[in-house]
Image (cartoon, rainbow, N blue to C red; front, side, top):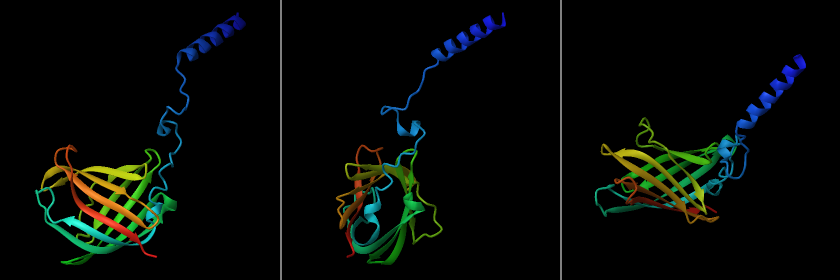
Length: 195
């Protein structure tokens, strides 16, 4: 009788496991669900390593129907951190009001294959960091979004990196007051690598 019970128990267990769906990692399963890190975007910002000159075109007032732009030059120096999973750039802005600095910090998340980017403005060193923009590169263009506030109202923020070559790159920032239906580009940077 013990042998009969063992056979019945084994049959029951096999039947129960047959009812449980089996999950197989495949191309249709997102890599984040497969338990493996997605490093496909880890080298997206490698192009920016080194020293650059920059030309800036910036709206003096954002989301105010302004067409009053200021232009100035600057520099950027970027280096890798955390074995490529992060990087930092030191920016110098030479404006008509004076020279100031800012720091861009980026970190890569292998679970989502996205980068997060924070900004520290040297004119307000103890200021609160803005929410990071998050995104990735596709077909050579990096697009990053966040939600922030401007004058007490919510705004969507968008960064776009494009026109990337070995010696040049283009960056722009835009705000949207209507949740992304329309965008106002308010800051444009064109970079040239220092030989």
